[in-house]
Length: 344
Image 1 (cartoon, one colour):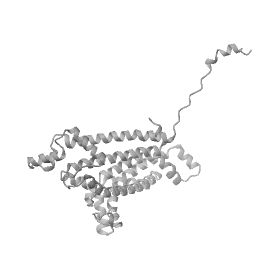
Image 2 (image 1 turned 90 degrees about the vertical axis):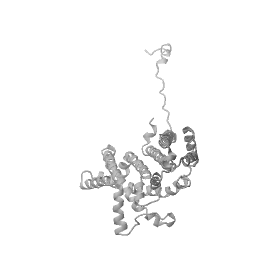
Image 3 (image 1 turned 180 degrees about the horizontal axis):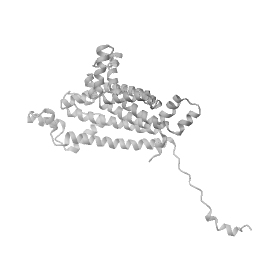
Image 4 (image 1 turned 60 degrees about the vertical axis):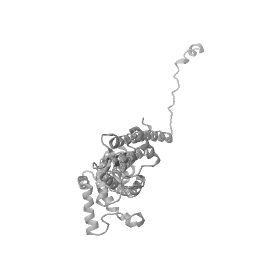
């Protein structure tokens, strides 16, 4: 017998409530939130770096003015330089003034060169930045090609040959590669200049002067990146979707370059970001070997000449470049793998 209306009307509270629908965000909101979180980390890291550099060069025991002029300097000259550099003011005030100048683009005047530090950095950066970009492009092309090839020929002669070559590339320092390249292509064959930089107004001649330094930098970096690429590709090749792609009729080459490589890019992009940061900050030896007027050579000369103003500004600038590159790499993570945008 069916229940009466009076009997079932009292049980309405037992009916299950409708489930709340999850809040869905579009891709633009998720990407913006991800970028803002990374931007906050970027700012905090940059402030911490500037504090460390300021403490090491201006606050720790030792007189920066005496260090710049030498221990034999006259006391009145040291006092005049301290007043010129503002070293007679409190450390907190000096730091805030320095950071305000950095934000405005006013990096001060070089004690050695007598010119604006911003102009010095701009003149040297037009050599270092193209050199790093060319070297990174060569690194990427060589490493991805060798890494994918070695993974596709796993446990064969081709794989062993690539691994042997990359081991040699890691073991031999880049300045040794630079010397060998100069002996072969500049001295023996005469195809490329052995050093110097004529300026970008010379056109192709200026570009030719960067070829050997770029290869010297790229060979070591490509050896490291090729091994990382090989390991990442081998790991992805074991996934089920690779077998599915092959079952759908894709060739091995199509599967490697269309599906496997993209899913292997997270560790590869991480190493690429670190390597590009090293190329910007670590070109001191190569720029001295090839006598290039770049940022690395400016740091070397400033340290030798005790120009602490230039050293302080350039170190912070390079640290900022490293943080910016890592910030860009984090954004590339979200582009490559959209799942990272939703992680807390």
